[in-house]
Image: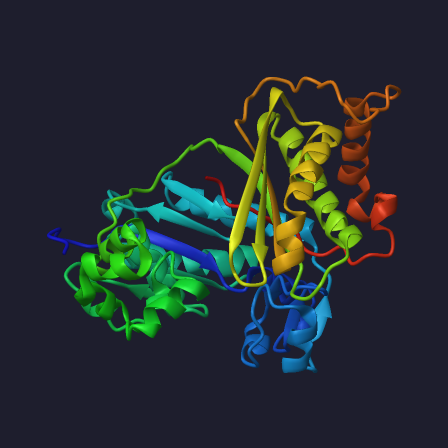
Amino acid sequence: MFVSSGDPTILHADLDSFYASVEQRDNHRLRGLPVIVGGGVVLAASYEAKAFGVRTAMSGAQARRLCPQAIVVPPRMSAYADASRVVFQIFRDTTPLVEGISIDEAFLDVGGLRKVSGTPREIAERLRTDVRQQAGLPISVGVAGSKFLAKVASAVAKPDGLLVVPFGAEIAFLHPLPIERLWGVGAVTSRKLRKFGLTTVGDIARAGEAELATILGRASARHLNALAHARDPRRVQTGRRRRSIGAQRAIGRGQHAREDIDAALLTLVDRVARRMRAAHRTGRTIVLRLRFGDYTRATRSHTVSLPTSETAVLLAVARSLLAEAQQLIAERGVTLIGVAVGNLADEAGTQLALPFGAVTSPSPGQLDSAVDSIWDKFGKAALTRGALLGRDPGISVPLLPD
């Protein structure tokens, strides 16, 4: 329970159905209509499509069955990146204390701004107006005394809303909400908790840590019990350096041929390597993350001897990790693939000795630079791998920083 007085000062600002909203903003004929971004897998859905049950990461086929009249558009990552830059500049104009957590959401600390900017509610209202006028996008904002509560408040406020959780009202706000509002309660955890009759956040709080531990284990029990009592001491952090750079892609349910899985891996490695070079970062630890049809997950990693950002090196390691997981994939079916590179450094990458017959002329680094230049100038569609020709490009979503 909070003992603070005054106004809560942490904002969570979250753009509504970001990719779909950008498409509707840029094409007036899409406004008010159900829009799905992405073909094979749903990257984003407008609220008009969500009304039919369409959800992010759902297969495109399932989404079209639920909403046959939906308009499906391909993703335009450069447009979304441009819109994000405009919005984050508005965040920084609002307060210097901004912690970005994805391309379309951030925490802001507005403590100490009352004399120059007004109350946190007034600041949040002005921020929403600025985003609407300058970026042409709807945004929902939650205001609370902790990051967790602010994020929950923004989710409850959606779409295009504002919700303030005053000090002293945290428990009354939180406890009636469904357990899925708690960080860490996904589909599997939700089923376990509901099996024992725990359906609301209040139920979690009343059950207590000991009882939760018998269901979920000690670590998860401690985490959920703290959140259910509105305990979250983390503050807004600025200027954090990423410990890893990664991307992930949902590939839908069903059996996937090896070449299709490898094509998805190619796309992810290309994206991650390009982002690393753009950030002038190199890394030593390559991580492969998999989610299976039964909702279980697996992680494989390998650390190379010298830091690198070369696509060929990262791809060779990622493919070897994928080969190690083939038995699990065959047994359970893979639904999501993620690739990340950790142990990041700022120095220039060093080419490793490649055991797979690396091309010596031009060097891999020169080839990477040439490809990056073409993509920067003409867009991703200007150049693609032969293995990806004729395939659904899918949707590669940046992983959040650690």
